[in-house]
Image (cartoon, rainbow, N blue to C red; front, side):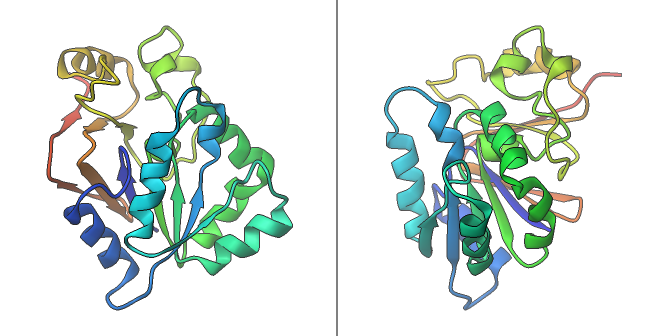
Length: 215
C-alpha cells in the first residue's frame, strides 16, 4: 500500500516528485479526486479549488463525490484512476461517508495497485481513530473519537503553523500529544509523509515535527 499524506495537497516540487515516484516513472497519472469532506465545511472553498488545480498540474483529474453518487457510478471511476486523492474538510463527515458509501470496504483492494493521497482530513482518517481532528484533539472528547481506517500506525495533524489554525503550534501540540494513542506527526503546508508498508519518510520544503508521549 502506497500512501502520501499532506496538509494541503501537492504544493511544491518535492511533493509532486514524491507522487510521481510512487506512481512510477513515465506512467501517466490519472487522479480520482474525492471532495466529499468539503461538503460539510462552511465558507469559501478557494482551498478546495487550489487542491484541484494542483492535481491538474501532475495529471488528469476526475471529481468523484462518494456522497452524491451510487457505488455503481463511483466504483468504476476509482478503478480507472491510478491515484485516489481524498480532499480536506470535515473529518468525521468524511469517515461517515466512507462507511455509508461502501468505500471503506473496497479501498484495501483498490490500493493494492493505486496510490492514496490524503489531504488534511483525507490524511487524518488513515489513523486508528480520528483523534487528531481539532474538535477531539483540543476538546475533552479525544477518547471518544470515531474509528479511522487503521492504515497508518501514527496520528497526523495538518496545517502546522498555519495562520488559519492558531492552535496547531508546537506549544499546544506538546501538551495534546500526551493524550493521544501513538505518535503524532504535525506537518506544515509544504510537507508530506510517504508511508509504504509501515515505513515512514517525510518530504519537506517547510517545517514538520514528530511528537511522542513522554515515558
